[in-house]
Image (cartoon, rainbow, N blue to C red):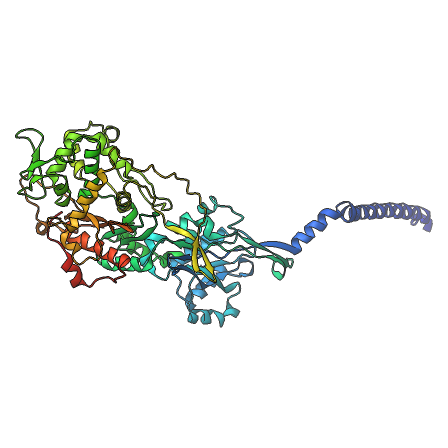
Amino acid sequence: MSPSRFKDHHRESRTFQVRAVIAFILVIIALFGLVSRFYFLQVTEHDRFTALSDKNRIQLQPVAPTRGLIYDRNGVLLADNQPSYSVTLLKEELQDLDGTLLRLQELIPITDRQIERFRKRFKQRRRPFESVPLRFRLTEEEIARISVNYHRLPGVRVEADLIRYYPYGSSLVHALGYVGRINERELQKVDETNYSATHYIGKLGVEKYYEAELHGDVGFQKVETNARGRIMRVVERSDPVPGKDLVMSLDLKLQQVTEKLLEGRRAAVVAIDPNDGGILALVSTPGYDPNLFVTGISNKDYGALRESDDLPLFNRALRGRYPPGSTVKPIIALAAIDSESVSPAFRVSDPGWFTLTKGGRKYRDWKRGGHGTVGLNLALAQSCDVWFYSAGHKMGIDPMSEYLGYFGFGSIESLDLPEATRGILPSREWKRNSRRLPWYPGDSLNLSIGQGFLLATPLQLATATAVIANRGRWVQPRMLKGLYQVDEEAGFTATDLNHDYGREKPDDVALKHPEYWDNIIQGMVDVVHGPRGTARRSAQGAKYRFAGKTGTAQVVGIKQDEEYDAEKLAERLRDHALFVAFAPVENPQIAVAVIVENGGGGSTTAAPIARKVMDAYLVGEDAVKETELESLMGYEHD
């Protein structure tokens, strides 16, 4: 057999040449594709990828502003910022989250609630390489324990932050409010850019109302990062604008004196400067420590506050709605004589009760035996219910409701107290809409002595008293005095903030007979300085003349023929004690409203407190000792 039959060299050569050509063509095509891709990336898309490269290398990061401070009217610091150390975790460096949390729990106390909150924040993290706090307010010992174990805790850091601190704790919480950790719902209501590095926001009171001024403006810094996003160096920085430092009208010393006078009671006091409406003191007891809420209160502490029978979380001064009792009688008397329903010379014979019809229901006077023949002045000084029953019956609901409205009842007239409520100012329309009932004559009798449907807050009572002190000139209550400024020559000053409160000032109370202011104010003066005034003992030894009005508000009704006996009632069913006053009469500098829940008579409990509040502000005396306070207590019921 011939060898040529087994191997054809010519055919093999031709096959190899064909395959070589095909391979060369494929290489040329691949090379062309690669060159084309290089051209597309390097030339056509050069600008876009250059920008992307710079964005990866240079990042813009927000820098949180420092929150503004809060001072009292004398320049005393009320709300400060203090450094606090927190343990935080960085997601990009964590190897085992659950294991890291367990190791941290072995080193420092961490509750299950804190871990639950951490996991929620961990999922809501807004930016890469943003650490998430686990526990706040670390002690030096806890910081040391974590530091020596860093090698076992990848991704764990101890970071410093400025947090709000209230040096006077519960003394000012109901006046200033507090800040707390910002949540997602609150972030949706603010400028997200301006709050991009902020962890805290005002939750209540002044801290909430003036959030925009206190927060400041966010700053930014350009930082160089590596491929993983870690900061290598700061390239450029634009410093944040700190929040404004605010000055309140509050007088810290007066606030503390007032709080001491109310110690152990469920009570509220509001003191206002009648000249400008500045709130000098706003106390609601018991209170609570706002510092507990700044970084997050524990379940145990919050549960104790929420479940307390004394309601420390409740702001009685702004939200407590009480029957004002006889404290509104000066306004009722003014409505009666100015509307010409009765004359200033109107007199009644008081046997201790009043009836609408012969043999009908008896509306009792607080003094069981009556006051005899009573005119306007004695009706105010002795708080004679029968005079007001008679005047209220003659007047009817319409003038009473109208004049009470002139003084701010049933509305919110404060400028910067977001928690304030409007109370209830009854009228024919109000009862028809709310109760589906007509207005009855008996309703007018109850309203004439500050009972029935009428409900008012201590802030409203203090405001109305300030309007009386000003003889009808309206001033709106406000906390803010101005911006904190320090002048080398003048020292501490408070300049106007030019804040738009968005609320117009009510019209001044323009009487048909302006001379009737004298009748009303003289009656209030005789309450404390007159020989038969219900609170005459509270004015003993006073270095100034003041005008006041006692009040007692029933908590539970008593039968017609039954006599009120506080000893037979549970403590929380006893009458509320109230007192309103302003001083000095000739040049009013302070208007005060006091409410003591279940305190009994206004003259025995509330009036001595108001007297010492005015003393502390006008004379500069400290809070009186218990024995001194008892010596001021009167013995009349109302």
